Image (cartoon, rainbow, N blue to C red; front, top):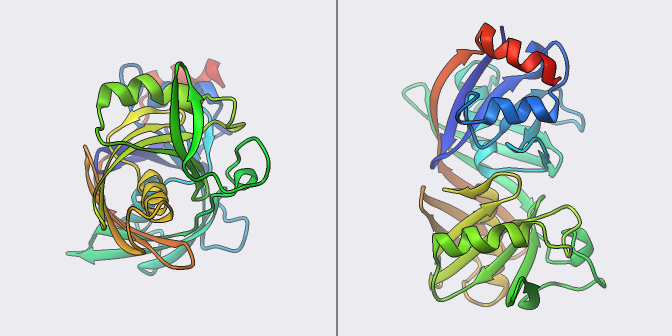
Length: 289
């Protein structure tokens, strides 16, 4: 039997599994089945605890519900940090985690013996096309036209360890996000696909966003998306360096965009439940390996 913990950050939910409890690596089809909300446990992805590979305290692999692997996730990291602290894996409230999008530092805010908020040092953002990655010559992709279907959108592409495409607009709409999100995610300009955000600036320190997450679709909240939009807003001169409040359907996150473009993300996190995969689910997963 495989134990797991499920948590969420503002409605963006992940399942945490220790790779040491698996008899074999998870296949993409197994990930899909586990994340399926009708046929499996149901989640926006899987956080897999693995040995650190670049000198951090812990290692993390992040899987999207379509079976693909993500480089980094702000909400996922906060859920992972709470799991490590509350389940006795981390001896201290501050520790480092290796991800495919770089090493991050997590700081757990503890009350009553449990983690309620986590601050994550997300690293530095970049707008340089090959570093995102985005096709075309080496340049900063800031307010650049992109043909999406029959529309031309002005986009700012940014990586915070994973790729994002930000569209600033005067009006944000869930239906529009769903309609254009998949087209942007799979646009040929992004060789590794991309996350997409539609953002409306509310003030010099506040934005509202809707999110289409690569490999997951429309999402209530995202830490890496919040970080990317905050950086893009500052880069476009719409917000100032410092704290930017990012509002999403799931709730609010705080992003500190420093002058050197390093990012600090802070927000709440909750555990939903802990359990084990049933024998029936294990039987269903076996032929998908």
